[in-house]
Length: 289
Image (cartoon, rainbow, N blue to C red; front, side):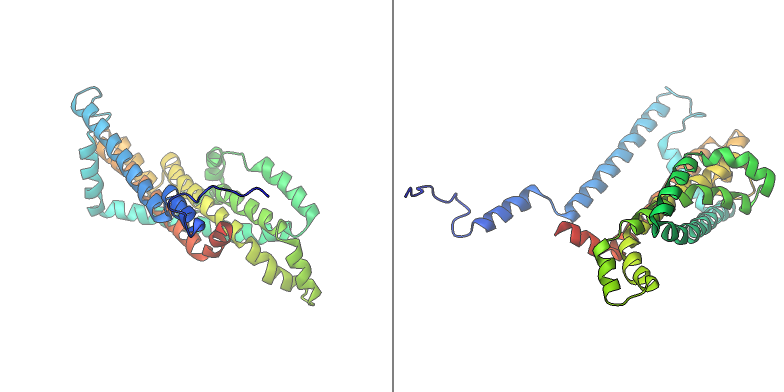
């Protein structure tokens, strides 16, 4: 019999797995460290871009009427919150966004569950969804304005058309791909179709539905502001940017309004991500096991 003469490496003597775990811990940073690094990298990128804009504008490489200094844009981004019309515009955009996203979920989730439960309906509706979904929502603005006028209804119709597809598709996919064994086990215990859907299918599809809502959230906000900017209207962040641009003398407000629109999108995306992590933390734990 051949005897091994190799000794455990330093740091693993007496407990090789402990040394392996320590090495893995050093090579794989924790979730908090990764998050902090992402925040620092993003902040550094924004500061770097701001410095470039500041230098280009101050040096006269681009006329300030077209590209004002970044410091001026930041100052205006703070000052506009003191304007009642801008605060009203933000509330109008947020209300249209939340209402449109909520209606999209109310439409898409039941339909997605219904279509996902049937193999034939799933295949048929998936083809229809893939055919209609690529239509740009902005292309519908002239037709929708003609039918509904330039108001809240017009914005909601376009937002729903844009935001309903990710929720519908994810719901269909999640319901259709729920663990078959789990459904069969529930049926073996005498659970009826409605009970299987409520106790097995919906909990299994919930993470997919949440992902669809998160994706649709970003789409809905972008579409709301775009519609306000293109179609005009009395209120909204997009309308504020359009009014500032039309004046011809408030280019700083155009950039400030655009910056605030991006900030709104960032905040809403952070809220959606935090809610998804909180409600479906069990899924992350299961994946990491």
